[in-house]
Image (cartoon, rainbow, N blue to C red; front, top):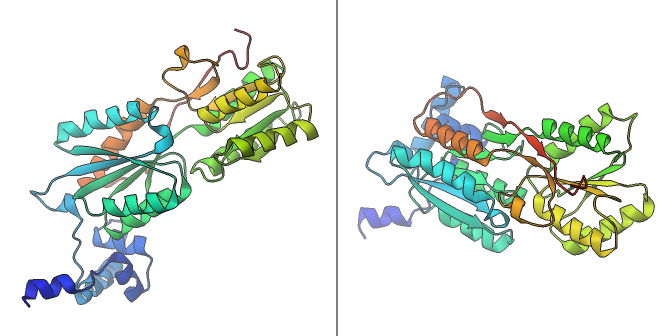
Length: 342
């Protein structure tokens, strides 16, 4: 058997193997191997010695190798196929000017399918990941792959799940403030926030809701409910809320699709929108002017977020120092007939 064949039979040494050997986290080892400026020289020396001893070779560190195909993979939640188009085009427009190929990968929430799909990505000559994933489990799986193979990762959506990662997010606090001011103007003083605990920005949205609601505490009452991706569960929770708290006169949903489901559910119960209950959603659809029902929404620029994501992944690839890793983009309230008779 040739030396090459013997080596191919050996178990590939990973970042996690080095982390165990030196007693550090995988993310610290990954940053040390990438010569991150915030990692001390002593830590870098220890990591490089262990890597050499174990026979580690960063086979997928494509952006450090000249002459290799350079591909940025944009991972999109399968529920965002329509809304992601604007974001993807903005990323492509920036990266194609730098001779970087862009691959769009739609990922399902199905655990077995999604895990296999993400694992396959490590076999590409991948230069970087840009994540539009909403599901916490999927994002954590992607983070592990990013760390394992030292592939740069930029995350879109407010999340503190992954430390030391570049994150781009709409201004959820300002968006929530705009919603509450609008609800006060239209006398909807008993709002309920609907979130999904599996979504990456649910914690941040909850925090913004509570912080803003407490500022208006003497003017209104508020509640929160968690609903996963199920119309049946949404129906049950809404029925419970309306039965226990008949004074409820507004719902704030974590995304546009849930707002549409809620509108259908309430009108099927002969509840008038917006006369009886008002609906506001986070996130806006490009085709809203042509869609019924028209939902009052917090809107933000996916074009701007895509441009920021592209420029940040370029900086990481070029080993530029990035001091600011959190980018907040402006939000605005678009008022439609789900909160006002217009």
